[in-house]
Amino acid sequence: MNSEHDGMDDHTTWKESIEKIDIPYNGNKHFVCVEHPGVIQNVDKALETIGNVKTVGKIYNDPSRRLALNWRPRDAYCKPVYGHRCNTTSLLLKVTRRKKKNAGDAGDFQYKAEVAGIIETTYKYQALVDYQYLPIQKKEGEKGTYENLLPKVVVQGLEDRQEFLNRDVPFFLPPTVFTRVDNPVDYLYRPDMEHTKRKGAFFPDLHRPDNLIGSVRQRRTVYTIFVNYGNKIPDQALDGANENLNYFLVDPKWVEETQQLFEEHPCWLKVMLKLRVSFRPDRLKYILPIVAYYYLDGPWRCQWVKIGYNPSKDPSAKIYQTIDYRVKQNSLIKMSISTKRGVLSTSLWNEVQRNQSQVAKINVSSLEQDPQDDTVLEFPDDPDFDKDLLYTFKPGKLPPYRLIYYQARNVLLDEVQALIKKNNGKETGCNEKDGWCVDNFCDQTRMYMKKAQHSLLDIDETLQCKKSKRKMRYLSDSGDEIDDNFQDEDMDIS
Image 1: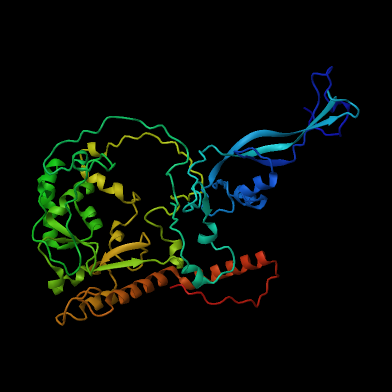
Image 2 (image 1 turned 180 degrees about the vertical axis):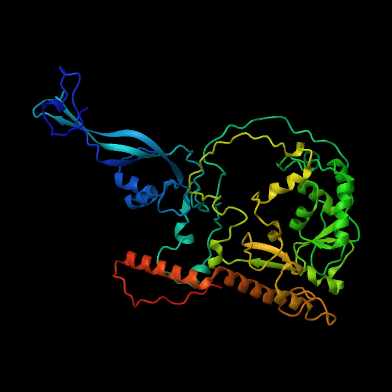
């Protein structure tokens, strides 16, 4: 193979007497290969199944996307098959066959070959082309005849909206997703699971009807009492909660410690309990149903309240009311505050699912002698991190996450504490929104908290910097010259 291309000469043709020839090679051209899973007889129709050259170019520019192939491009109900992007080291070889004139039927052909370029990216369709649900319906009275439903269920052009929505159409609703995976997998047949028999346990194999196919995993019984605002307050734990403690080997001292915390304060956020207990925080899910119930809504939502205690009957419980503080997505504060969970961990249906290598790790935290050290596993391990910020709003400190629940007594702002005490001894009743406090207590509290955050971040300076960057980016994209007199509109940062 010769890397220098000086034009086609006698050495570029095959002859019976020559076993090795030099082929011109063009290494400056790069191509993208699409292995179409079909016999192509019409190139234009084949390109239509994958969109067009422009569509392929857009997908090629995003390495995480897959190339969709629709067998019926004009059918909105066609389930596509997806081609995965693969890195390849291939050459595009162009072979030309010429037939000499007056060669007869036998033919005397002459072949020429050259390397047109390099193929570094190939889209391969390795999944099954399955689940093609056609939008058709059998015609009544005509055996073996079907009717196309596309003109009835899909807008074909400019039509009257009211007439189209009121039109009587066939019931055609195929599922959006047919299978969870594209590639076939080997199923491992194994005998039915044998569950540990204990009192109160639910065995799915024995209680499931014969006509249903379901999971063989034993149901995980939850003994937590969930209460909505205005419902009856429980005066005792559910039956079986104490037996659940013995099954999971919960130390009675841990239960006494948790009960003592609820004697100090009848309402707790779970993050506060995790930082106060001396045992492993994951044991709380077995202990809390014994001593407390969970509020789903109302002034004390997302809190654990002592069993038998009704905060809606006690005006002094207003210091425990829940304040949920959220940093809006369009606020500049989000640049300094992270999220509790990664927002980029999920992937779309048309993106590549790459298998990440997993490193085996042994969890030895349960074998340690001192369980107090395990409490830091669920929180940031930075020694300079103030863990009180997980449930306390302090002036001069940013919240660690964009959404945090606080108790009113833990919002350490003078204005908020003054609001709590504003109607002391004058409470007329408890409502679902503001509890025992003054009207619009939650809204005013968030306003004071937001004001404290804005003053901390020096919003004015940050806003001017961002507006300047936006102006430069806008002008560079539009190709216009920069005008010193250009002014941006005011941006709402609330």
